[in-house]
Image: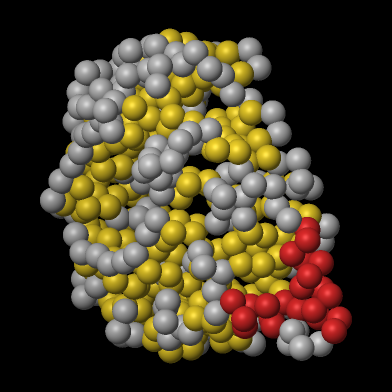
Length: 430
């Protein structure tokens, strides 16, 4: 169910034929929102357009989100919260509270609350579904809005049409995208299980199940029976043995790969039981880097990234991020003593050593990141070249054609989107 703007106005202020309500609506119109200052001429694509949004009219703002090359952010004024778009306009209306904006197939959606009820709002300011006692953060499933909700003690999943998927349960997790279809974990009567888009239970009932994962277009998950953990398929088949603890299954290079624990040690292994690397004090779920396995590990007080051959990439560091996929190549952020830097698949430091660097980003197939120099943040490319302009904060980088990029940043009392023109982010491997 999607409601139009007339219903939204009635919902916030009441029927407009009342004098007090007309006065309230007129007062809201007069408040106004600072419009962005255009920095570029017209006839540009959305991603090529640059602009600035003045933040001085807001009491508080959250970090901006990049949604299809456009800025959206949560803001507060008085006792009300709302979402602002790249035009400086409010999406929907003011609410008692709102979640961070979410990217649903290139469009924004968010959870809002008003007068004790929660609901989902789309980019047109329309309510999706009904009002609920509680609603989850909207999820992108096959390009559509899907979310969990609850009324009284019952929990359920709702799709973009406002229809319920499956039945009512004691608990449901956030819906997950499995090949463009909905799947979610649920609990009823003390048992937990996975439910598919048709509302069918898949894989059996267990003492505990994880969120469903996409295994080559089918559902996979981990489950617990008694004190033992294992991976299960949507047909209920156990995959790869039983363990003392386990992580989410991943489908990488044509096989299921997951982390597991026996006694005090963690390791990464395949569905055939083949271990990758050694046993470690801790590991995180493996990542898919161009069809090959890479994972974060901790051993003897030091952190490292391990590749599919079980070998560390670079060395061991004071800290490392999860490995990132940059056009099929491994890259990650590392720290040694008080210095931070980016490491590539050869174990080489890229772009110099700094006091702060962001995670590496994939810009036209090359590695890019931002670094702090003094009080400003600058963009750095794979060759170590730094942008001439610095910002008070940088929030995200995005790719543009012809080896260019755009940045969403903060400068003074404004969020800005600008096109980076003084650095080259060439296509493909440098």
